Length: 533
Image 1 (cartoon, rainbow, N blue to C red):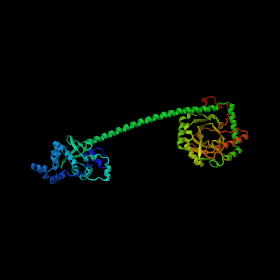
Image 2 (image 1 turned 180 degrees about the vertical axis):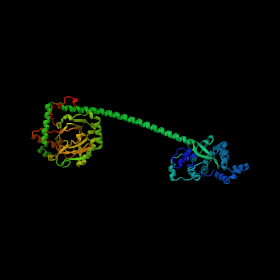
Image 3 (image 1 turned 45 degrees about the vertical axis):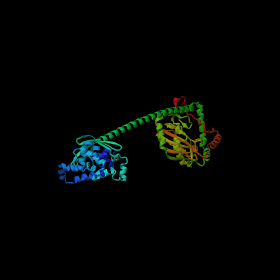
Image 4 (image 1 turned 180 degrees about the horizontal axis):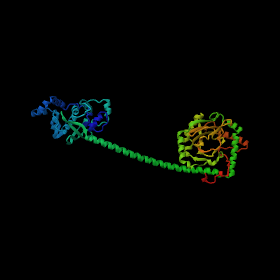
């Protein structure tokens, strides 16, 4: 009943019994209907309307008692069908006598329930928070004697309390002092409850609002919820361990793939160094000659004409904010995990002191066209240039400049006209060893301050660029991507023009597929074994 009381008051309730016998607040209305053929309430109220002294006097008179019993609106057969030999106790209560025991008042309450008397149900229960009138109102609503409002319907939408409208049977399981354990058979459920009754001056005994089963059910429900929470927690822990195991498996597989990829790139780098000293020296001499022509007045004039109008703007470079967070986090994590796997980059005559320029390969799926890096960089580049762009390539490796590294002034191949430079990490002097970019006339080379995480876009095939001197100390890690305009750009035509210019100065042609020749400064710069990389 206590649970039902909470339910009708707008709180959740799950037990029908609790609603019926324990919850005074549920028993809102009264069972405000009339018993069959006559009003039990009328007879009982008439008997109780007399002064208390007269009621006591009449109870002492056997004749008067029999007359009152004879006026009971329910027949012996009706009461016996529910209460058997205890039917007389119920009859006496219905005609105004006090209940002799908690069991008797419980039986009378069931009869009031069955014959829908909300007033009796409300009057024979204790609730210090509600008046009898309010409780009778709740019982009337519950029993369908009054129409529920929209709010009450919503609050009782999934309630089992409506089963109490059709009680079919009643049985007292035990009666011990103030406690009565009983069972009510309803239309679709059988409800079992154990309730406590208290003495009352008017009715002898009334329901006290306390139930043993409801408390036990609450404890059981709490235990069930705790068990469910523990089970869910265990399931989540198992799932988390499974996810971690799968992630470890994927990570181990990725590491294995990356190790193989590193070895393959290291082999390529080794091949570039497996040449005679004279061959490497010739490559460097040839590259020096090419860059001398391209950076000279005639070469710069040709480049400005070939790249007209400029892809970016007259100055040819733009700071484009910051490296996308997703790219920087991914590449920094990769650098921190695998830095020990870096090796001396493939021979490049533009890099002085080759042992001080390291390469850390990136996973191929990151660097492909339409891949993770391309999809994040391309919109930034298109916004800066106002043109549709397409990826030529993402640098296959991170470039790590270490103390003593250098980068000579040069221009890039027409195949890669636009460079996106992304400094990821700088230590020591690496944060001030800035890239220098020449002006369109090829006269001034101004340093472009760029801190880790910032983004620089420049026309590397049009403007001379490099770094002044050697890195005095510290290190600098860079990532690169190369783009070109998607329309109206003819790399081969530009390349043919430059090749003609180089040929006129007796410099080797600068084919896009041919790496620039090296120029080792000292014999020990050659690598003979893989481990030396």
